[in-house]
Length: 401
Image (cartoon, rainbow, N blue to C red; front, top):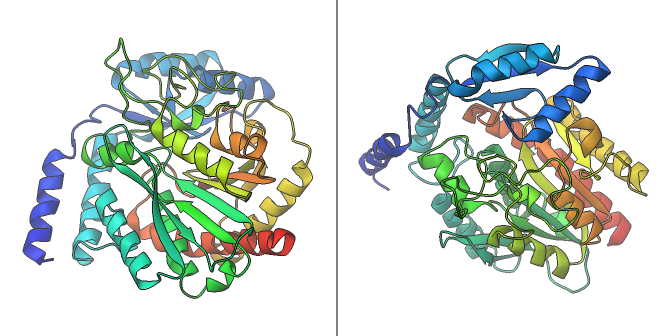
């Protein structure tokens, strides 16, 4: 692609990217040290009233700032301002990302966060170069008519154990798709041995409409883009939309909330597509890739109780965390979702484990102090996370292959 054309496209993207949208928004860092503070904080998170990025960071709209600060003070929860000018921060991130796109001349690279059409081109190129290993399929058509693409990587044969992985069920978590695309590249290259006894089924971007919207309009858009009747609020939290203890905890029936679970379980075509994969495949490991927080979480998410094989889940998770730390020094916390993070009924990892019968199921929260880590972090995170993928792949091969 001509470099002049690339720069023109970047300039156009800047014009329509919604700069100024986050004027007056603040991101807070919250700390709950005592048991009573932790209980209060979890209740606030589970209410869905504020947009918590994890259990430490929360984005607050200008009109909600006074109420948020009052609520923190009344609950004796320590808080400080992490980003005082979120709009400026978003602009800086976008400018750096555009430089990375320009350096790659509009093609996919690990120097920037790319749009969905560029990702699809990358997948098609991989499949064209490795037709005996790679097959690109469509698992769903999104609300806005986009294909939700998946990649099956296999050396052939039947009855092999399958690792299913998805990223970007939450649109704004751009680092997750990039990391799984790196895995795909490695599986047809230096890590091809991980395909010997295991098939991999990878969905790089599950929430395709939301992902595109987060690039063009609202950088921190989380949900799908489906229309909700009776309101101007769009979208459903895909990770509260699965039909396993749906709407029991950590979700809301308020369509304007970031944790809106939908008007019914599997209301979204994207979650139905993942459901069909989980029920069809011989899944032995499911990985839901998210950001941020350096966490490896296992069920349950709907209740504060341990699953029967929690020791096995914990042991494998810790091996993966150790592999990451050995490569990049990043320390991950491993544990049950409701204990380490917060309740999230209707989540994909619980569904994969309980209904999809995957004996190993995790949510992996990649590094970063939010959903917009700079593009410079992409390669280091890809390298260290690949060590965890290798641990997971080898374990499934040795145990079920």
